[in-house]
Structures are given as structure tokens and as C-alpha cells.
Length: 468
Image (cartoon, rainbow, N blue to C red; front, side):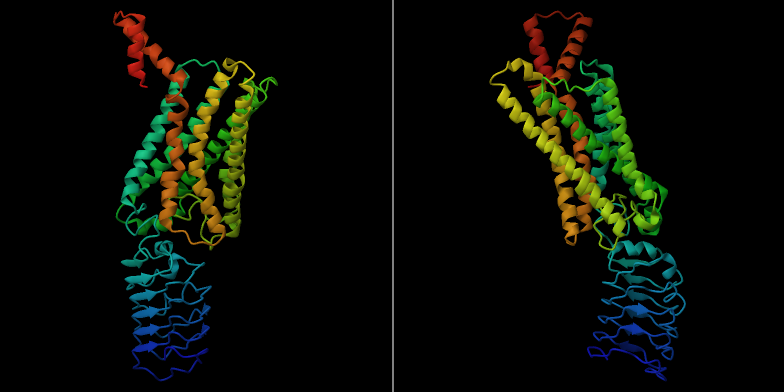
């Protein structure tokens, strides 16, 4: 009976057809399945309802289908499925096709009693987490996770450990180094150390994802839903959000401070220790509030951090709660884009001011500030390279362009953390002050072992040790 114009099926349409084994009703215009319409089809094994306009299924729509083995509902417009519609009526069901169907009210109880179900086909991989006992579920990956592993891509499974180690080692090294070496600008050092702490949180986040990937290795689907709703997933997602937002705000603050000192050199805009400490504490408080606000109202935000296996709230799915999508868009396309524009404007003004004033003023007056400005320009440049893909990602999401999970995984594991890994190199290891301190340490070491060299030869040694 497929490929007709059937719109409704009466309650007695299949009355008396006890021996019927296969029924094909695909490509019609059926809008709903009434309760009990298949009651007499006690020996039916195949039921195909693909490509209709079915919007609702009643709790007893499949009543009487005790022998049903194969059910396909592909490409219907279902908006609600009763939790017990499958469980009680089809005990022998082995194959269930639900491709191209959104199931907003999906739950584990919906499929728990289908003990013989071995193959199920959904629209989204995340639905597979609600049928943990099914042997084969398709799609078997969303580009982020797979049926077996939290991280589907083997390259990124290795890379996440490497990036996490580089981030934590580099930033802890800078914190220790700047704590041991005295600096003329202590306020600047305090801001740098605060930025290192924020970047370290990103390393902790990546280590956590890598650890849980190992924990669920080979059987992720059995734990997927429990993991995404767990407190651990919520906390590490919150940690990643705290890290990114505090890092963005700190870079903006340090950029604006340099902007005021370079563009208005005679106005004495240098922040004192108390002012600097106040701004740093304020930034951390704001970052913490941004990260924890989604916990306050579950009705509005839902499972904000648990929409994917890596627990990061990019929110590109159109079926997510509107409140969560608006909040995520406000953070990434509102606050972060505004910060990025401010940074670009500030550095453009700084270099224009330096170029203009260096012709009339003594160049030595600006040398130190220009060096710092250039240093921070490269830091912000790498930060911009990380954030531009996020801006494009969110814009495409607002335009309802479908974005694959693989892109999300690369963004979260590779693009977002990369500036946290590069920052220690850019703002400490390659600075002239750091290299001077290394030279001084080498000089003291050579003096302790009693090595006597001429100033010229010592200089040569320093040059070779510190590189070009």
C-alpha cells in the first residue's frame, strides 16, 4: 500500500488479518496513528511507515504487535513519542528505524524493555546514549564521540594529551620563573601570572577529557548519557568556560593599559598595585559568574555543559533550549567579539601613535613601551587566530548552517587551547628581559666553577646559549 495518498487509517482497517506478516505503508500522507489500529495483526513481522506525515504516536498505537520484528518510521514529522509506546507492545522488536526524526522527549525508559532490540537507527548520535544495551546503533559517531570512545578521532586522542602537557608545563614554568626573578614592573608581572593561571585551567580541562576518554575506552555508549549529565562533565565544562573568558578579559585589560600609557604618555595612567589587584579580582569574579550562571536555572539553560562528550558549550544544535543558545551567542559573539574589536583598535592606535611621536621625541623614551606593545601584539594575534573560527562558527550556527561534530572537536581540542600553549613562549621565553636573566644565571654558574674568560668570550658564550 506504499506510494499512495492515504491520509487516515480507521480503527478497523486491518480487522481479521491475523496471518499478515508484512505491511508497507511508506510514502503516503498519514498524519497520526490511532490507538489499536494494528490490534488484529498479531503475526505481523514487518511494518514500514517511512516518509509519511506522522506527527504523533499514541501510547497504544502499536498494541497487538506481539510478533513485530522490523519497524521503520524514517522521515516523519514526529514531535512527541510516549515513553511506553515501544516498550509494552512489541517485545520481539529487533530492528527499529527512526532516521530523520527529532525526539525531544527521548529517555532511557523509552527503550529499556526492548530486550531483543539489537539494531536501532537515529537521526543523531547522541540519541544512542539512551539505548545503551543495543548492540548496533547508527549513526555510530557525531564527529566528537563514537560508539566506543569519548573522542572519536585517534589523532586528537593523542593530541589532547600533548596540548594539555604543553599548556600546563609552559604556564607553570612561567609562574615559577616570574616568582623567582625580580621585575621592575610588578603589576605587569602580577597580570601575567594571573593570565598563566587562567591558561593552566585549560590544560586541566584537557587532561580531564583525556582521562575520561581512557576510562570509557571501548564502551563509551554505555556511559554516554550518564557522563554528559554527570557533575564531573558540568564542572570541567565550567572550568573551560572560566579559562577562556578570564583569558580574554585579562588580555583586553592588559592591552587597554598599554594603550593608555603609550597613546597618552604624559597623563600618568599607570595603574597602582591596588588598582591592578582590584581589576584582576574583578575579572576573575566576572569569569566565574559567566561560567556558573547556567547552573542557576535548569529550565532556561537545560544541560548547558552536557550537550556533547567534551562538555564545551558551543551550542550549534537548533534543537537546544533557546535560553542556552542565546546565552552562548551573547558570550561568544557579544563579549568576546567586543573584546577582540577593542584589542584590534587599541593596537592600531598604539602603533600609529608610536610611529607619529617617534619622529619628534627621543626614541629611547618609547623603546621599552614599543617592545612590550609588539610582544603583546603577537600574543593577541595568536589569540585572534583562535577566536576568529569561533566567531565564524557561531555566525554559521545562527544562519542554521549544519556544522559537523568533527569541526566542533577540532575547535575545542586544537583551536581554543592553542594560544594557551603559545602564550608562555610569546610573553616570557622570547622576551629580552628573560634572555638577560638567563645570561646572568649562566655568568654566575661559570663564576662558581671558577671559569675565567674575557668579557668578549663570555659574551660569545651567552650569545650561543641564548640563541639568535
